[in-house]
Image (cartoon, rainbow, N blue to C red; front, side):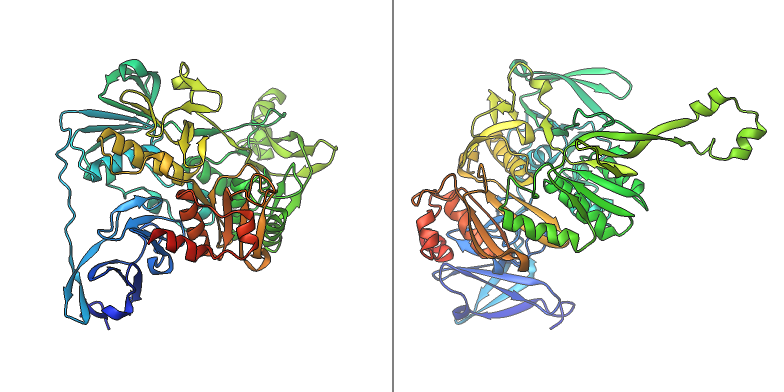
Length: 562
């Protein structure tokens, strides 16, 4: 079968279970997904629009088709987007019913174009070009908002996929243009006034007003019907000496990633921090294969210690060590030591002597840069560059009068005041797990969906209180996924073998037999993690006793959805 000549596929109805779904991979590598409810069938492009996963390998729970990789969720009847990290719904195809068989015509797509005719006389201003700000604007336009949208970003680039900086870009696996959210022409295509290189210096929530400053210092005051503040977070710089030397980097932006990529060639790299950002950067640089060495320094005795158990941590450590990464554990950085390095102009001794340069001019031609990392125990680690993976802090200064030390308190619709919303990394909001601030990409995208629905006054979209957090980390091509939120991984139940990348681990708040799991992480057990996520979302997460008794989590998730 060739996609260039044949667009129709015939499928037997008996192949598809009632209330279920099935995917069919074609010779051209495309996938068709069929869902069934009694005698009603629907056909879709079966590849998840986020990363191309076969949706037939996921789960269908009720009307929810859930991607096995990153839990993007789609309506089984029309393919509409219910849950990110996908940002669009599924392409739907026309079906011809032939009695016992169905004919799917992939050339005949069902038009889902929505008119942007709602609230045409209103103006929405979005402050911040990250995932939350982008998703708010994108969702507004894709759900019928016809008013003016202005998106203001201090960045010099259109919104892009920040998580892929450490997961793919640094490793050389994805070019910059592929990271742009919605493509290079997203703003113009969606009639969005994208204003780059501009800084919002003041937000007046009670007036739904902002003051914008451009790169030349010019001010512009604007008032909107709806104001969305999604200013994100910034890296924490530890207070130790030398943290601002030349050669010390953090990773938050595309420019940061480019600097690290260029500066790390043939250099001794030291990474401070064993959270998922530090580990992803190490993985990406090791895969790129351009550094002289990579050393990770951690205060704890394990990596990602606030997320996974020691057994899972050990498997991750081995994965890195097999690629040449070195670890120093139970260590605190006392200072980043410096060394003087000549600039290009002064590096040539003959040039300096020929010009009879004075000692003072030579001194001015030198600058201080990283020479190494000194630990609290006095040990010196040689380094040419240092990358700080020491966490981030929410950028809440624009909402100084309303903020909380750990984020802006908003309701389950991300609303701070009437018509004013705070979302993304700055928001301390109530989800299914309780009130918390979570710095994850999928959560930021969830915030955008919920905010757009609130602006449009749509009550058919789940509020944040009906959603759960989810994130994933990619290291050496292995994707560890985590669903829910647990205060500690120390009361867990581990099933499987992390060393062979085949496990699921459930996390609890205590050791009680009737305590329900709060979160789970997994490698290689996609359906089980999807099933757990659905049970958690519905308030039916398994107890410790149930898991120890051999609880069939997939069957239970399906049973509750029937």
